[in-house]
Image (tube, rainbow over all chains, first blue to last red):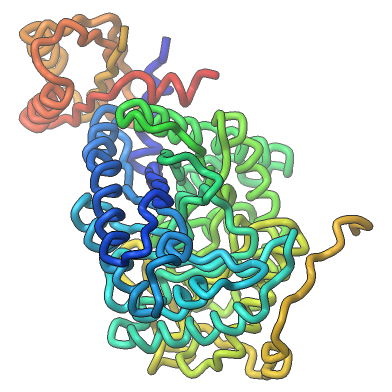
Length: 454
Length: 90
């Protein structure tokens, strides 16, 4: 039988160490909403999502109450809209009407984000893909809760450099369209290499075409819990350190597994995966950078950071995998800048640069995330940053991503405030040397060789 | 049988257990186990209870217990046992 100390430990994690379930994300296939008539597509999407997701928020709240665990976000991901709207949309403006429908649905069912305004173009772009991509600035500036993602490359296909070039321009254009709100649109736009089909986290969540009609995916969190556990093993060797992270990750993930199973049972929708992630928030004590400091660094970004992050990421996976029946999504330690107080402090202290962040993305769960850069950064430079990150993902067979915010009208040293879970960020300097001739070549970078590994 | 864990945390005063137990008895909630300890000067009590024959819904019981806690200056939480057993047992 459970004893009082175990009960106290769990409740301390929830009350003092910010343990929560970060998101229950309901994936919904919209493939059966396809029609050549735009109005019908919009009607079908509206009807399908409001039907399937009507109980999502209430279910989440009931689980919160029964188990006493906060479920911070309830979200929806849908089939990439470039596929759903392809037959009906002839212009970027046509696609933007679907974004409006998604936004309306999100408000009605009470979710805070809906992901899947997406295109998968790792090898080439269809006309519909390109129209959707060109509609992103309009879509994100005229909606509140819609998130957009574009998959630009994969280990199997290489990198679509035409799309990389286009996305550099689109990121900048989205920043321009939302400049009154500190270019907030870019916080809802992410580009990927090796994007997973079942990621529950925003902005990159979409419901892949390999998925069932509807599925429940859950993202767990708990940087504060890991940090607190590590405070008790200060000065111990790496074996003790790693075992402690592993055991803690197991406990955190078990809660996610329980919540996912309950949600699945209550909504009668199959359970997909647990994304076993350390996802920070701007709240004090909910920081991945603080864990790196607890491991022994003065600041995130100091020499040793990449190694510390690599071991953290790996132990989180090792502990979490056993705690869940199905693991997927992005799974690992997230390192967003604006959403993590410790990362913000490291940037302000001058310990963390864009280049170090890039190195860290080789061993973290995703990539360059929530980084504010000067608004006068050239589109080709943004494309160059994206291409670098895609290359890391392609060669290392991992998911990488870029969610970067060129803040129009602001420069290095200034701060940008996104609010809520998106936090705030100091604007970071970008390497000023050009890469125009590289980005403008056009075409694709071929897939890497899958042998002769070293 | 689904079990529920009730925890009471706060400054120790006379009658905490009596008050909680009276409420449970009035609502047909059976107590299976009680343990208590002092952690960092705070009174910590845990009850394992069976709510299967309870006269009210889980959410209402949880709210009413929390309200009683507020009255007597302690925090009372009501959680399904699974969250603890999943986390601490393989």
